[in-house]
Image (cartoon, rainbow, N blue to C red):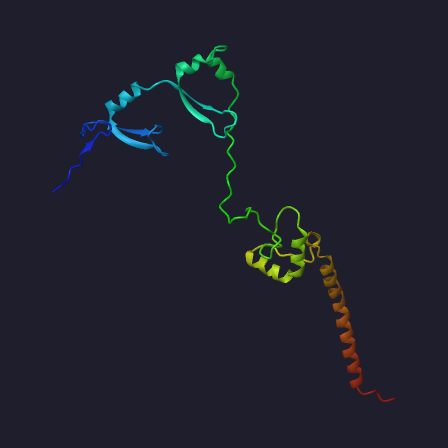
Length: 215
């Protein structure tokens, strides 16, 4: 057995038949309305009454000294226009400058533990060596020097650039001159050690070979 849906006007409760035209009414602003618009259904004749009863108004924002948020006010159009006593309202609005964007109040940072300012402390092993703008503190420099390999391992795991002893900017930023000099000294000494080793092997080879008989 089939079911038949019966609909009624949200405004009057009047039955809506299949022959009745239906209007969708969205309420954007009302003293009893919450934060979001709502919609209701009504007969077209009821919607027409709303339209006929509509007032001509001006919607303005009042930005008053000492108040962060403006006051939004709906004013009867005749009352608002009557405030313009020096210049007709139409001329006043044409000559007026474009409205400046409203300044948004600074948003509070996300909740953080007490005593935490929300800023990253790069003078800790947790963040030392990470790329950042601003001055590198002596405490961060010391951490980088004392835990160079450990910090680079962490940077790799984080997908960040590592600190290079071959990069002049990194050397200057973290005070790595001594470590860079030691690295250069080791690299320069390596060929000498290899050459000395090769000569020693040659000497041993020469001693092992029998001397040629005199003709």
